[in-house]
Length: 234
Image (cartoon, rainbow, N blue to C red; front, side):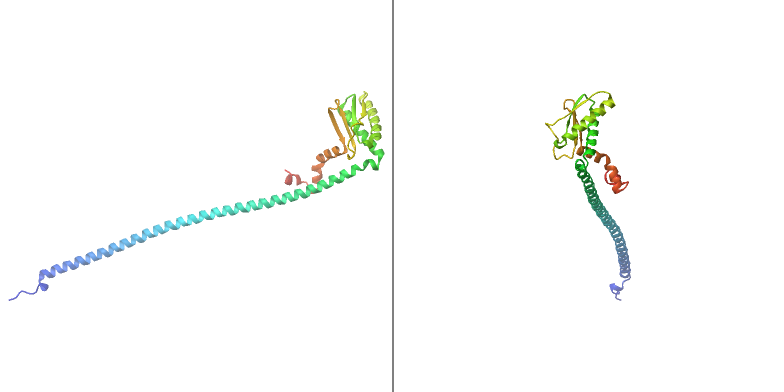
């Protein structure tokens, strides 16, 4: 009697079955391991992707914030530049108007002597007398335009009398005909004391200059409004 073939031998069948089980187990393990690796890879990919997205988002936000600040700064500079240009134009226009007004005043005072000689003599007397009171010296000299010489001499005489009546002492004021004021002067006098070291400038030009300084705030307020000095001249 012959023994059956090896393929049908019980021991063979047992071994083959074990091998199939082992192969199936290994295959299952490999599938699960592959799935685990895939899940871990997907998780790491998602984490890395999220990290990259956050980094890129932060970079974009930083870049946007930087550009926004630059744009805001540029806008502020532009606005400030335009405001300064407007302010300067307004100041320039206002200063031109003020200069024109004061020039008109200069032109008017230049014609006082020619229009009313008597009134001019009274003005000269008051200017000389003011200098006598300010210096309070026994002897002073007076400078004036050559064409005003006679009028100034009369003004000096009257001023000396008024000074003596007011102060109770005599004063001698002499017209300095060797060093007169320029003929281009609008008029008025310069009184010298302290042996020529002290000078009181009572010419029309200087008095007008002082008046411009004193009256300028009021003139600005009258022309341009109450708050103009605070808004444009601070």
